[in-house]
Each structure stands twice: as structure tokens, then as C-alpha cells.
Image (tube, rainbow, N blue to C red):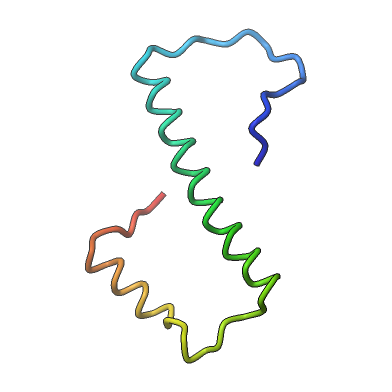
Amino acid sequence: MSQRPATAPVPERQPLDERAAASVLAYAAEQRAKVDVLASVLEDIAANGYPAPETGMLWETARDARLADGQLRVA
């Protein structure tokens, strides 16, 4: 993801109030953090190869842990 603003001309926009703008910025930061984590995992795999299956976690176990913690969210 680029952190540069769009360079194409943008049609007139409706301004956001301060709370809405803060909420959008917080959401963007959260999404950027998730993408950064994914990118670091992919970079590690590219540099070091796949981890051994014995050291990993089954997706079912990860899913069940997230369900138990209440962290699973539906978009």
C-alpha cells in the first residue's frame, strides 16, 4: 500500500466531521498494521522458506482460539 496521496484530480468532496475523520484514520491504521504483519510473514517465507509443519498451528486450532476469545469478526 502506498502512503502517497492520490495524484489524479479528485471531484469535490463532502468534508467529514472530526469524529468521523478520526474513525476513518484509525481504521486505516488498523488495516495498514494487518497488511504489514502479512507482508512480514511473506518476506520471512521468501527469505527462509516455509516453516516445518510440526512447528505450525492447524487452521482449525487458530480458528477455535479466535472464536473462544471473541476476536472473530464478520466484515
